[in-house]
Length: 192
Image (cartoon, rainbow, N blue to C red; front, side, top):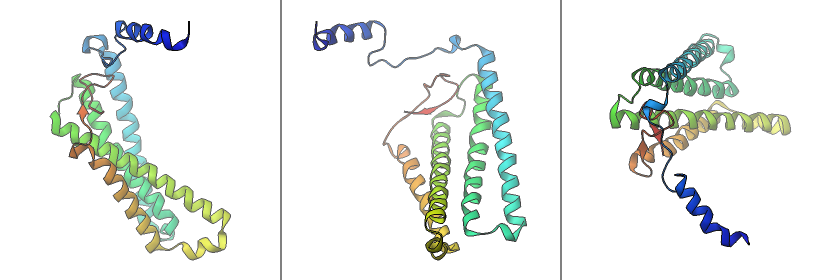
């Protein structure tokens, strides 16, 4: 029997197993309380460490003028975006895990997803900028000295934030939809 003729049988089997177009859903009763509390607490602890650690990086940057080099502006931008990610995501995840449901409504879910996307994409793009900067310093050391300036670094950082904002705001404008049907159904909202 060839592979093409077996395809309809496999499709029927997938539908019988509820694997067709129906999304897999887990009911609240299937997730024990201790799992939600454990996940929420772990996220809160990691988020708190992220908040404190990134605040220390920002404090070092602002208190020591020798650290204010163009290359370190990328590190500062990464610390800002990671601080905002930790501060905006961890407490909300923890609170909703304790309540076992999403308590902030549709607007809260929109803002939660927007902030998570904005700060997450900003962190990734900042890491990309750091990588490109380091690549240029290693492969073209003399040219990189000419290219590196505070103004150019700030332009790149502004471009990173604008790029991130462009991708983050799209779902709020109807490009996608937000749903509260994640693995921890009703305890978190997620972007579909």
